[in-house]
Image 1: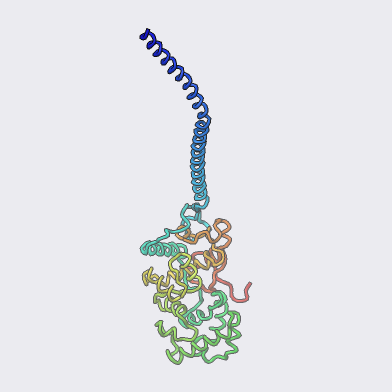
Image 2 (image 1 turned 180 degrees about the vertical axis):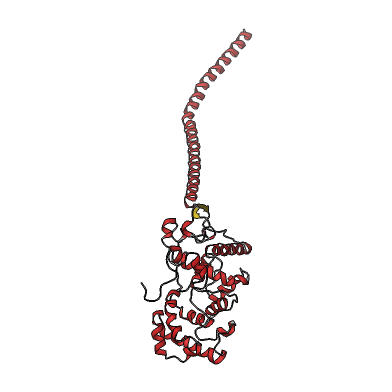
Length: 365
């Protein structure tokens, strides 16, 4: 019996333990069930946060991609397109044909060597277009040339050429002009503008020639610039065209074009003369002046250049500042390039042979 009792006790204890375990299981399950919503909520929040972060990253990536596309589009939009410019023309600009696609600007950092080569090539091209380039003032001797050049200030060579025949017919020598009646000279020079000041200058330089140089025009720069009304520009015109001594004539056309071509950034005529002179052999200076000035008067005008008819357009950094349409540009051409008379009443035969027409005398037409 004691053994049975013990066994019974053990059985009862096992039963009680099992019962306790069964009671504990529902409690744990209940606790787990009670905990599950909070856990699920936390997990859900975590998932939502992760999803939001992913969405944000995707949005940022998309925005970046869009911005990149916009930049590319913008760059493409502002990128300058190549422009079509005429190929090198012959002396007959009207016969120019064909186009060549080039950049409108030379390299931003053009080396000194590249500048010299481009400048000299432009001069060679212009020499082909204007093989008959010459001083556009009528003259028979150095005295007539120096007087005509002084009179050309603030007026055209054409107007001077129409005025000087009467002046030189009445006063053919420095002695004659020095002793003239100022009022009579003023009346002759009236068409040139600023006639009183010009009368004073030409009579003054005539007197200086008589008193200091025996009535002869000196052939040295330092002597010429001492004459009334004569500066470096006038002196180089006389030296280059009456004495055959090289010089650069920095007039308004020359200044405008060499700056457009980026040969110099100077604005002072003396500094322009020095910088351009350094780009070319001295023997080229006089003809260079003619080529540049002729191009400026006929094609590369101040207000509206005829870019579409320009023979050196592929070499010009300023291409596009004027009319680029070839047909419209041809209508802007002046003098013989536009089929009109030149500025000289008595031009050289080479000019006439090339198709140039002499200008009419004062009062004609």
